[in-house]
Length: 280
Image 1 (cartoon, rainbow, N blue to C red):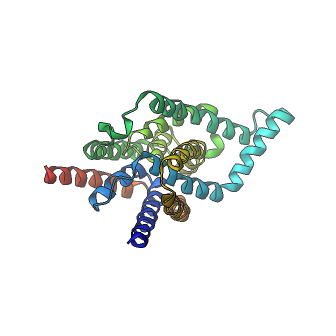
Image 2: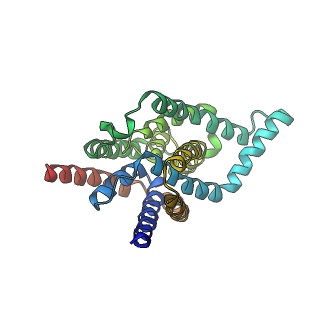
Image 3: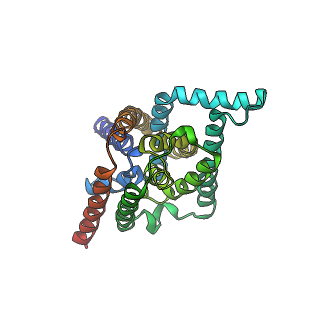
């Protein structure tokens, strides 16, 4: 019986990792799906710590995928400090990522310190997630229609990083989607789709890494020893599926609009509201 339970936990975390990997970088909200799908399937709510821990798999994937870009960023920092090349593109990109990370780190720390009931608050409820998802579908649609799509990553300025970073902090609300809100903001400020997605992924590296490390530490401290291997399996499945979803989205946005994600988000929210109404 213990072996069966252990295997079930491994399978549970494996599937959570797949959900995390497929939804973290697609603009459809990984937190919303990790909250809603387990309830729809009759599983237990994984909780904030597990969700954030699974994000480590996603960060492994994005670092692997964009390792050459990260090399350019670190090179830009060295050039700026040792060669006085402060206007170099690579340093501007590094500074934009740094400034864009500050808002979500600050807000995340405030929530962690001052909002003790965040994990069970109304914003993590299914009705809230549904309404936020529907709202985001309309916001993404506006960005898709009005966005000029004339700027590329080569045009980045530090102010772009801070502005998109401000919007990224809204992703702490389940259902918003970190990639969804940052890509939307970038499109509204004139970026073309592929560059918007690429910067979104790079911007997410520090925030997701910090969140994952903090929550993994908390998870290790509270989980039974038998939970650690299933959690590791979930992180591995998250890494593999994240790598696939990053590649698919980058290639998809080279030629296609975000309409498929906009439509999906709208009907996902409607489905959740219908499900809640049915249960009541």
